Image: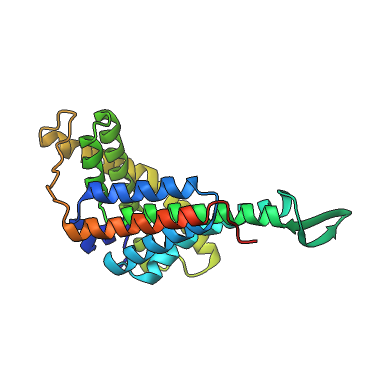
Length: 260
C-alpha cells in the first residue's frame, strides 16, 4: 500500500496536539536556522525536529530519511558548486582540468556546509509539520489567522485536485500493469505515452464530477472548516521551552563558529 504525507499525519499521535503550538515551533526553527551564521544551529534544529517526528510522531525512520534525502540530493549539487567556485582562504586540494585550476578552500567549504545545514534544518521543520498535521487542519489554521478566504479556498481546491490527478494516474497504471503493459522497455514506453495522453482527459472528467457533487451539496463559494479546540498542556509547553532553550544556547555559543 502506498502512503503519502497526509496518511502519516492522520495516523500520527501528534495530530491531536495544538496546531498553533506546532506552527510556533516550526516558525521558530526556520527563523533561527536561517539567521544563524554557524552550521551548528541548523544541524541542532534538524536533530531535534527529526527526533520529535520519528519518536513522538511515530513516523517510520526509513520513510522519513527517504523523503529527507530528496531535497538533500538537490542541495548537494549546489553545495559542491559553492565549495569549488566560491570563497577564499587555505586550499585543501586542487586539480587542473583543461588548463583551469579547481580547488576547495576553507571559506567556500564553510559556506557550503552552512547552506547544507540550513536546508536540512528547514526541511526537518517542514516535514515535522506536514507529517504531524493534516493539510485540512493547516488550511483551517490559515483561515482562522485571517488569511484571504479566496487564497485559502483556492489552495484547498488545488490540493484536492492533486489527489484526483493521482487517483486517476494510479488507476490507469494499475490497469496497465495487470495487462503486462510494463513487461519490457518497448511496452513500458508505449504504456507511459498512453498514460500521459489519457491522464488529462480523465482528470478533467473527475474534476467535473467533483464540482457537480459540491454543487449538489449547496456549495456557495465558501467552505466551512471545522477547527477543533486543543488546549496546550503543561508537558508540551515544558518540552517546547527546553527545545527553545537548547537552540538559543547553541545559537549564542556558536555565533560565527565554523567547521573548518
